[in-house]
Image (cartoon, rainbow, N blue to C red; front, side, top):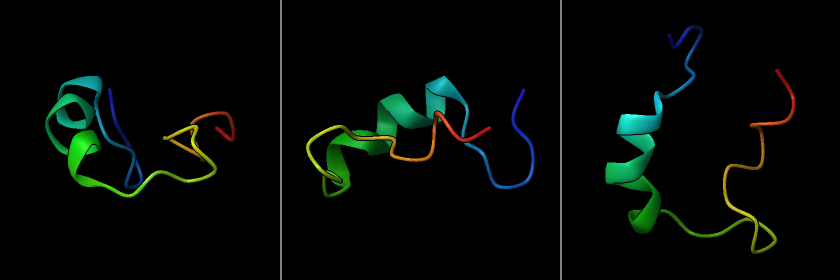
Length: 33
C-alpha cells in the first residue's frame, strides 16, 4: 500500500530502470519511512 507519494513495488519495477541511480543504491528514500 503506497501513501504520500510512495511508489508500490510494481510501479518501481516499471520505472526504476529509467531513473538515475542515487549513490548506486537506488530507492534512496526507501529506508526513511
